Image 1 (cartoon, rainbow, N blue to C red):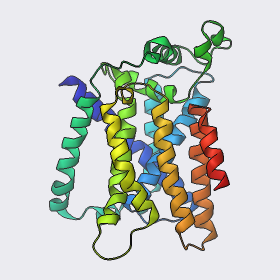
Image 2: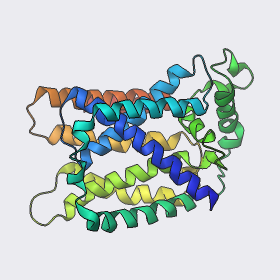
Image 3: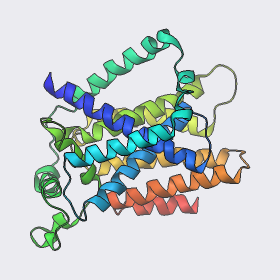
Image 4: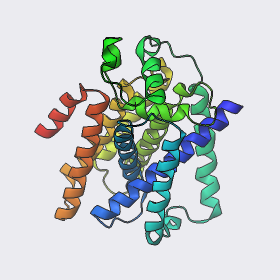
Length: 293
C-alpha cells in the first residue's frame, strides 16, 4: 500500500504545482477565464517550465529534494499572485454532488493506473543507460565528458531530470516506474474532456474534439504496453505530439481575431516544441511538420 499512496501524493503535488505555475504564466500573456481547457494547457506549460528550471539548476547542482522545495515555493508565490483568478475555480466544480460524481471515479481510476505502473519494465534501455543517467543526475551536476564512459550517457534527455524528482520523494520505492504515469493521467483526462464535445447533444463538434476521441484508444493501448512503465523517453514525446496537435487544430479552426490570443497559442506551441526536442532530438522532425502546416 506504500507505493500507491506515495505515488498518488507525488502526482498530486506535481499536478498542482505545475498547473498553478502554468496558470500564472497564462495570465501574464492573456487574461483567460479559468476553465478545464485552460487548466490542461496550464499543466503542460508548468510541466515544461519545470523541465526548463531543472536544466538550469543542473548546471551547478544535482537533482535533490531541494528542487521540489524550490518549485513548490515558486508555485506558492504564483498562487498568491493568482488569488483573484483562483476564486472562480468554484465555477468549474459546483457543489459537493459534483465533487463526488467526478472526484471519486477519478481517484479510483488514478489508483488503478498506479497499480498498472507497478509492473516490471522490460525495455532493455532502462538497465542499459536510463537508470545510470538518472543516478548521475541525482548525484552530480552536469559532468563534462560523461559520454566518454558510455556513449548513451551523452544522450542527456531532459526528461530524465524530471523523473529524477521522483527519486527524491520521501523514499518512494521503484520511483522510476511512475514518471510516465503522471503524463498518461493528464493526457487521458484532457482527451476525455475533448471527446465529450463529440457526444454533446446539439451543436457541432470541433475538429480537435474528434481528434481527441480518436486518440483515446491508442493512448489506452499504451497502458497495456510495457514501455509506458519507467523512464522511456519515447512516451513523453508521444504525449507532446498529441497535445500539440490538439492546439494546432484549435488554432487552425478558430475564428479568433485577437492577436494576443494567437500570440499566446504560438508561444505555447513553441515552448512545448523546444522542451520536446530537448527530450528527444528526433521530435524536431514532427515539429518541422507542424511548422509546414
